Image (cartoon, rainbow, N blue to C red; front, side, top):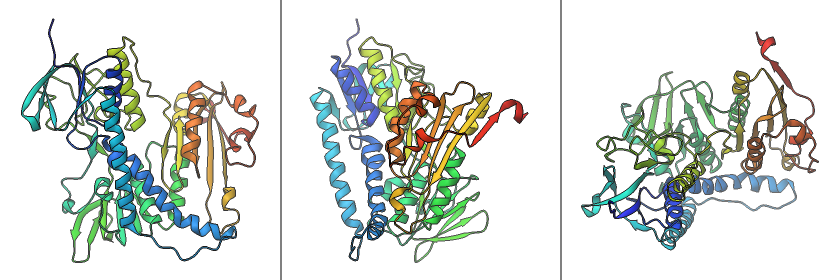
Length: 461
């Protein structure tokens, strides 16, 4: 019987890799994880967590303004960017320490170096110039921001990575990209008082989301003073004495102190030695895996963004746990990637789970839409013009709720609970049988009785 240095060697100590390592070690496996940067990965170090802290910071200006309508005397306020950065850095360092200590308590060996695959059971530790062997290798290296490398002047732009460490807050910024990261950072900078534009090549922001969410968020962003430009893209980034000018296909000249690109992410596979080891990769370099995370090489698995399936931290964590269950607990556990609840921490924020209206029309013979748009109660004493949107997509034949789509305060919290109901296959009748919580925005979920739209395949034909 072949003897290996480790039962499991994990390359990458992000959310998915850390979960897999801890669970596997808990089942008695000898585990090591290699990380060339910081433990915690994109989410903890330069993604979801610091982003959410920035979102909180960006919303205080409106909170102060709204407080006056409720009788509070609000003194003159001011914002200090270096204080936010320093406090954010301290919190991230604390969280990284927790991740490290959790791995160590589980008995996982942490190796602080870059690692690459040398074969089905071999890993090269670059910083230590040595090889180790493992019965199983798990690739959990995540992804990195995309850039248009052919764009003249691309070297002058930043990504979300650099946005977390800017020494000063720019007076004006242009964000390129209309996905999660683009709309979230546009809201962050706008809320912090930065003159903000967002440019996106598509017809509408947030491709893949329900159309009502897309158009509603677009409108709310414009109300807040964000210049949202769709159907256009950069042709050149010009550096000037005072900042940058972004030239576009439609002839715009967007003057900015910073230009941030948020046009997607690419799997981190460069230099990993995957091709040499016989690991099949997809069009974007991603590791091609089966339902259990296994690659084309039986001893090599992959989880998280490096597989380019669903690029969300909780998905990577679920995949990492499922891998450990499958391999080290004799409990084959595939991951269901359907009906995953998610939030966009834009301002106002979004929550969504299940099918969009367009997707439901493609899959069902009849679709009922329940939709309510209203001013949140918290704003009724203020002069702020903001709408909340609640939308249910229902199978017109079975009554099953296929999708829930929200825009407004606490949508990210609400969608977690709604995700359970959609996953369970709850019906509209069961929603209706639930007593409302009053007064709350969420009560609309159980009080909408009549469809706002009814669609049938026969009528559409």
